[in-house]
Length: 481
Image (cartoon, rainbow, N blue to C red; front, side, top):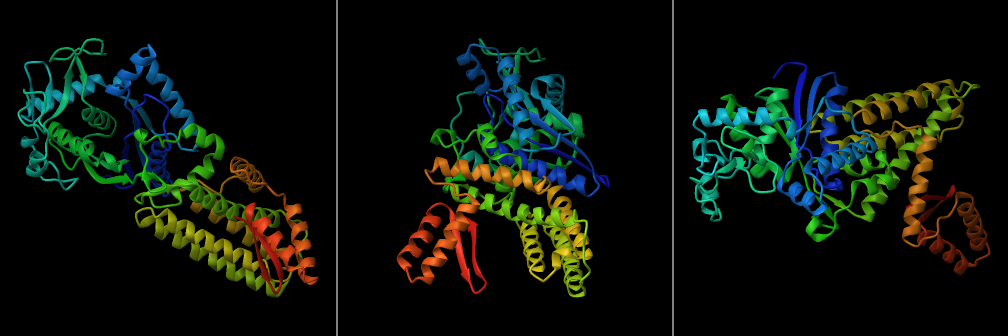
């Protein structure tokens, strides 16, 4: 490791179709770490790859009657557009497997030379896991257990059923490249090792991927990279994001519950997507449901409603000093310092985004509470406090998690449209604010006239259409569920 520098790699998608929201969560996790390191002044070299040669790609290209290159180039562009919609920052390098065949072949040659790989009579090259005693250290799997549970392999030229392919000999009708072992194509695992080694060197600080890649992909990466270079550890810190589920069911194409990222982003937008997926810790299984989406909408509205108020205060021209209100804002500025420190502590604790957002919501509550004091919004100190609130939101939350940096009015308009679309899809009526206020006044009059039946009807009508009301001695308030 070099002080002040971070070298990181993220396993990107296999591009044989549009990315789904599981891919999107993984990409956002990598983007989160990238933003975090940059926010705190590190020089970051970030590599994200595309796997553009694979069995699935070959089969899909055959079905479509086009070349693998045409297919993958199409879906790389689709993925790039999706990443931009999700407000992701550009990596230092975006790599493709087919651009790195010389590096892949060179690494395989080194593995063979070092006695860790072997060539079969058919021209396949395999890695010998028995030559690498540390195999299984990342996943916690022992070699004996792996061998005992291994299925019988069709390829009888393998020395061990668990040995994995570094190079696959050419098959009729499939893309192939020249190599010292004959025409063929690389195995899946060697791709990332070769690309990472080219752009980051034989060792890196951080390597990211979904938890489904721990074994065998990342386990194999470690083995072949260290076998080729003779240097270890290959990676200092591994980062694996958890699965995405649908109402507690693992997302799977075979189950038919995969949501296309483009459709999702078109409906919800980048900031809301980031709130949905980064509002929970990256290592927590995230259950994607209507309820979790609604919660994220409400959370983002809370932040932007407070920001809208803060923007209005910050832009005021005429203010009247008020000693009591000035003291209130003095206390709030202390809260801002406390919140900033607490947010940074949560980031330092394995990038706990849920904890960081919780601190921001606490600060938002304190900001709204300060505004309840008489004349609080009209004092000179209010400008300073409003500006500081916006800075905490935009700098500490926005620069890392990627939410809170839009102009408040435009974001609130977007969220209102999202709510309207969701309500239309669910067959609900979308009530405008003035209509809600009118119904609340009618309910108040009904209660005063002891017409409790009508009063209850209004409450139920509001609730059925996503509006929750609360009665207090100060009056009735409402919020959208």
